[in-house]
Image (cartoon, rainbow, N blue to C red; front, side, top):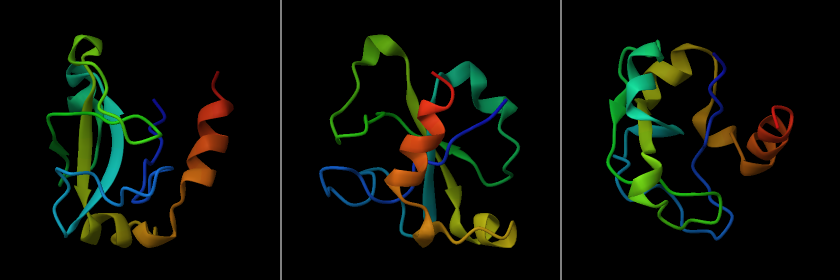
Length: 96
């Protein structure tokens, strides 16, 4: 299964996810039953998922944010600060 990075910046400029710790990367939004399928060792499930424009998604949708420690992401060869919404938007649209 492909998981798309959500990154640090949101379209409305809200900055990082409100639940994101300073040493974490906002990885993606998922349904909680998918959490065990994410292979990052430092993954953490949050409480409130946000959409691409920075609005909280309805709880009835069942989505939760996932965060991963920056250190693990960097060890994989990815610079979390270099991931942008533009990259994510392109990746998301390829799977519609």
